[in-house]
Length: 87
Image 1 (cartoon, rainbow, N blue to C red):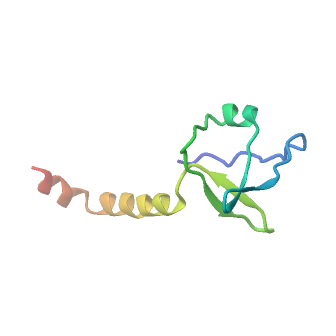
Image 2 (cartoon, rainbow, N blue to C red):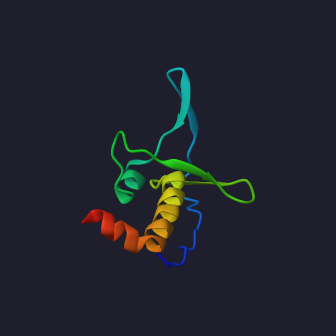
């Protein structure tokens, strides 16, 4: 939980181009990047806006992470009551 964030370095050898796909637009990821990130068709990535106007794509839903943080805090606070209810 207390992992320090990895230093992000731009990969100047990879440039993604926005393309029309049907009635939408999308990004095509190079095969090597898909393999390195262990992505499969149908996987979901969540965009997280960064300070300075960039975005980060993550497989972790930030809303779910926030909800789990609140839930963990509640489980810790009401541990005794939850233990009694579980009996």
